[in-house]
Amino acid sequence: MYVIVAGGGKVGFYLAQELLNDNHEVLVIERDPMRAAAISEELGEAVMNGDGCEATTLDAAGVARADLVAAVTGDDEDNLVVCEIARRRGVPRTIARINNPKNELLFKRRGIETTISATQAILAQIEQELPTHDMIPLLQLHSGLELVEIKLPETSPVAGRSVREVLLPPESLISLVVDPGGVPRIPSGDTRLNPGDALVVVTQRESTELLREALIGSTHGLDT
Image 1 (cartoon, rainbow, N blue to C red):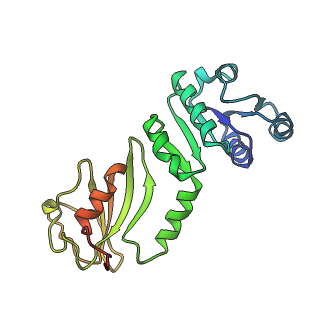
Image 2 (cartoon, rainbow, N blue to C red):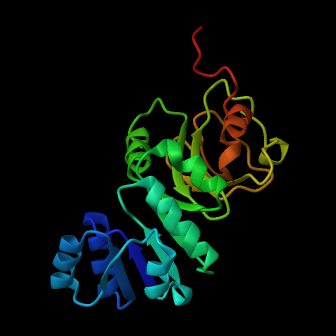
């Protein structure tokens, strides 16, 4: 692939280095001339000094033939602009680094589906270590889909029901059931759900609260 990396900080540098090691064609665009020179010493010609937020810079970088543009600067606004220009130039895939998780919805609304938030990734890892958490985000997929894990409490409205009896939000699917003993099962319509089961569910990101209500109940965990 030909990959353009906008932003030559630590994230951009190590990303480019790994891609080059995997024999991809890579070009890093870095605004700071001193930083660009330092990257050039390590990566050779795989760096361009310029502003990735400017269409002329991206055009000079050959954005029209890029397979992927990764905007990984430390500024969310810059990353948004880079991805929008790349999309208008016909790049089939863009990836944006998000430094402030509150900006994720803005990126989605502007049509940039693939975003990476270090804060969210670390938070998701922490939540996996907390047994009291009833819904854990596992993975963000394409087309607005998300993979989540839900542990059914004793008070779950679906406890004792079969999968086909459970009314889920649109475009949601129970893909795996793991019993309290850690035994995984690929469910059928007749699979019965029990308290303590952990369900791996694919759903639309905007449907996670509806999913929580359907499987856990709207009042679960509320003491007041």
